[in-house]
Length: 541
Image: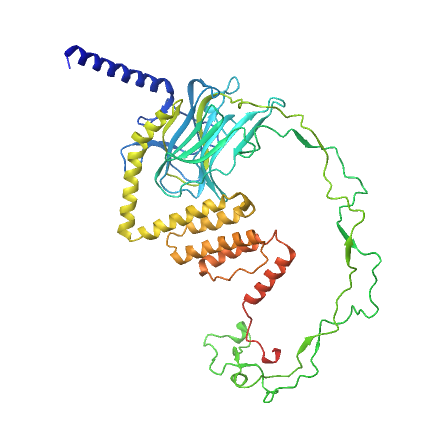
């Protein structure tokens, strides 16, 4: 290759590289690495309720710095204004940042707020929970809440009201102490992607009716708030037969059980022996004071003579089911000739309905962190706003991934050293599976109890495989009842004591919405499994 051709090729490569760098610079709206102290670039709120102290701190095990939540049980607020507001209406916009829960997260938020332009006169040091935002994005976990939020505040063009639209069934928060990367990609075709560590966890469409609660586009019709149910509207599908009459031989006062006249006292029954006697081996304590402690009495024990005989004490004839018992008479039900169905108000046009081709996004004018948390050690880093997915991907590969790999290897080494790597890996898979089960739409009514059991399990790192399996069995039992209607008894599995206490509360709550027949069945099971009182008298048998 000649010198001139080689020079031309080098010149072409340099030109292309320059264009790529320029494009990258143009696409990056904001990038905050926190390599330098944040003073002067980020403004800490001066509102009284925000007492939490932000620190410029190294990530544990790295030379890399971040923005640290340094105290427990505090509210925190800090904000950075953009050089100029960013429009979300044209092209792709990527929101990305890293967060590391160095002490774990039992109760607290680690999300970001992307603020819209504030009212005239607003200053950054007044940033608080009431500062209007366009998007709220990031992890939040406390009690029944375990989700990576994505909330869009959208203005209804008819009413002028700003409505919070929550992403339905968002991904859950990773439960470890590693650095994780959260990415939200807003596409020009109205699609939204949520990525965790570069892997897509959720895809939605802003205009789809099933992806946000409430939907961005309101319903065309709504129930008429002024419509009232007519007084003569009959919603009873069945009614007692007015022509039915109680049979003359129907005795409502007959008892359910009667004495068994055919019963005879068992031979060898000890009428004069009590069921319990004073413990002959018991002695009065030396420090017992009759005046202060009262008259001392020996504790009672089961009479040993009763153990070798049919029974002791006064014998009484047992009872049996009364064949004449019929209970209270009720007229049989018949179809209601006046039944009109379940009443509901008529639909009218929704005065706030509007059509929408694209969301009317408010611009992003600032980015803020406004959280309340019971945990310290939350570290924010590498906050990025970009118009190019490739830019976000390059930061993922160069800033997040190397740290994550180091942390992951260290965690693995610690698990191997303690001999818990196999169980820990199994636990993580089980809990990840349970969180996915909790997000199943038709389990929404059980979600609070499910998440409660999961969180209690996560707080016990020494859980055995048997206990974890027992937790899974509880969930499968719930699924079985929901799928098959709860009519058949599920084979009973005895979990360990640790899980039994947790799962019992879960099962009791799950029964609250089921039919009356299921409640009776559950009551029977409780009676069968109830702890007995003292030894049952043989004559009761």
